[in-house]
Every structure is written in C-alpha cells, then in structure tokens.
Image (cartoon, rainbow, N blue to C red):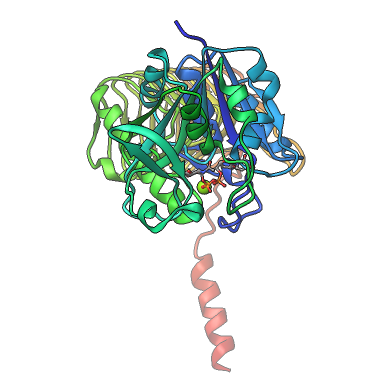
Length: 447
Ligand code: UD1
Ligand code: MG
C-alpha cells in the first residue's frame, strides 16, 4: 500500500458568491464544500490530510477539524499561485509520502474512486498525473497539451496561443504527484507568466524536462465542476442530490418522487423505508427500517426507530428520538425529546425538551411550554399517559405513568401516576343570559 498525503487548497477567495462567508464554507447537501473534499480524502485512505487556508481563516480551519480532527492546517500568507499554496505545506511534504494528491476546496463532487484512478500512473513510475475533462466551455481552464497520447504541458488560458486554446481537454485542477520528487519539482517553478503567479501546472513541463512521465486521467465534467457562483453552487447541489437519491434507492428505500426529496450527505436510511414527495432531510438524520415519512415533512438531527410513521407536514428538530412504532401526525413539531415505543402525537402539537414514555397519547393541540424567555425547561411524561387535547404543560413539570390530563388543562404541578389532573375553570351555564344581552344591545342601537 502506497502512503497518501492529500493537500486541499482553500486559500483563494472567490468574490463572485456575493457573500460574507468564505466560498469553501458554502454548503452542498448539508456539508461545506471543503468538508466534502476533506471527507473524500479521508475516505480514500489518506494517511494525512492537510488544508491550506488564507490568513485569519479560523472559520475554515474549524470546519475542517470538525470533519477530520487530525487534519493539519497551513496558512498561505499571500496568494501567489497554486504551486506557492502547495509549498505552504512544505513541512508536510518533507515528511515523505509515496503519493501526494492536490485537491481544490471549491470542487466538492470529486469521488474517491477518481482520486484512486489518479494515483495509478504514479505506481507505474509517473512523476505527476493530472485529472482532465472536457467542459462544455473551456474558457478559463488550463489546456492539456499532449503528444502522441502523452502529456507534455499544461497551458493556462492567459498564456496560451490560439492553437493551444483550441484544445478541448482541460485541467480539472486535481493533480497527483510522486511524493519523492514533488519538492524539487515545485522548487523549480517560477512566476514568469501572464499572472505573475507560481503555477502548479508548470510541474508537468518540469517533470518532462528531467525525463519523468506525466499522465492524464479523464473524468466526467459533472464530477469536477468547480463552484464560483451561487448558480454553480445550485448545480453542484443538484448533482449531489441525484447521487444521494440513487444510493438511497439502491439501499432499499422507496422514494415515490425522488426529484422532490432532498437528502444530506450523512442521511442514513434503512430498508423498506417509504418517503413520500417533498421531504427535506437536514444533517444528522438516522432512519431505521420500515419507517414511513409522509409528504411535506422536514427532519434534522433526528432518529426514527423501526416502524415509525411521521407526517404529512411533520417537523423533527435536533434531538428528536422516536422509539419503535411512534406515530407523529400533521403539524407536529418535536425537538430534543425522546418518545417511547408506540407513543402517538397525531395533531398540531409541540413537544420540546421532553421525555415521554411508551404508549402515551398526546392529544391534539397539546404543547410543552418549555421556554420562559431566558431558559429552557424539561417536561417528563410517563408511560401509558393520556394527555387530553389542548393541554399546556408548563415546564419544568412531571406527569406520572398512567395519568390523564383533562382537555384544555394548564399543567403547572406534578401529576401523580394514575391521577386525573384538571387544570381549567369549571363550566358554568347561565340560563337565558345570551338572549338578555342581545335584547339590551339591540335596544341601545335603536335609540
Ligand atoms: C487552476 C489551474 C487550471 C485549471 C483550473 C481548474 C493553475 C495555475 N491553474 O486555475 O489549470 O484548469 O484551476 O479549476 O493551477 N489557491 C490558493 N492559493 C493561491 C492560488 C490558488 O489556495 O495562491 C487555490 C484556490 O483557493 C482554488 C485553487 O487553488 O481552490 C485554484 O485556484 P484558482 O485561482 O481558482 O485557479 P484557476 O485560475 O481557476
Ligand atoms: Mg478557479
């Protein structure tokens, strides 16, 4: 097994996103672009992952660490070109790896298999491999110049002759290097070009000049699409959603209208899960087998155990943990709450910061009042409880196993197990009162 160092370049700041957020922190499928790249590097078995960021970019560093805690961060103090950026990580390169792969933080869709394919020629003696692709519009990309099938040079658009510009095979940006010769090659790169930058792409000509081979691996244009604008961000999102839906279906989930279901990169779906149209999965959702998610539901940070049914129009927020067979109906929101097996919350309810036992029924319109304007408080509801419709549970409060609350109650004190709590005014009927009122008001009006 050849050892691998992956170096992610993320120091350049594209300004075309019209955003206060650094470009590589924009998300696709619920994960930042740089996060995708780092995760792909990890998945491809990199012994070390290093990321080159711009000065003061602690936010990018923090995001990288959240995905790969042992990733190393290097700062490129000045933006002087892609080779200069790679050399910011000289300390990592000096440790000596068999293969070094350079990826861009704004190219989130590259798959691990492509990264592996790029490394293959290195094992056969090449000094450098470049990922090539044929974009619909090659403007702005480096052109791959070949001679009888071998790569001789990469020419940047601004430095190219008209004949070179006519070449349609372009540099996707992903390059792999023989780790034993990368440093002398990079140190030989100068900035004598149109942009006065140190181009990583010059590595090809330098390697060839010392008699080493350079190779090209071709990739699908959709996979290597870089993101510079919000429109391209949306295109990347569409591509990744297609992949995630296909994978979900291949793993045994039914998506009735797959194009209307939006998944996150970390969504986990069991077998025989059925997802109706227009469902959105934010990050951190785990769905066990045989769950049904009805139309127009929104989930994030939730765990749904086997046989759960939610929606239509259900909202599960972070910390929602639903036991086996739990049923959540329309216009119900669950947050930071565990619900025991068989419990039902079927209509128009909010359950937050709560723990609810098994086989409890929470009636329509019932709400946990968990927030006093300063702090959140917990509600504890036992097993086999019957919460009458429109019960307000003012937290912190506890309702014991087997208790009932009367419809319309405001519960502020502990309810013992098997008790009935009535927390509302008693009904009083005043005979004839309405008729007398009408007569008085009519007389006043006609005066
Ligand atoms: C680069 C390639 C070009 C290729 C294209 C693919 C070079 C010289 N050119 O051009 O052949 O077709 O990508 O998209 O490599 N970066 C830094 N520090 C720097 C400069 C760049 O970290 O000083 C990072 C950027 O954040 C970005 C990546 O390197 O992630 C590429 O930089 P960019 O300026 O976009 O290069 P291109 O001109 O697009
Ligand atoms: Mg670019």
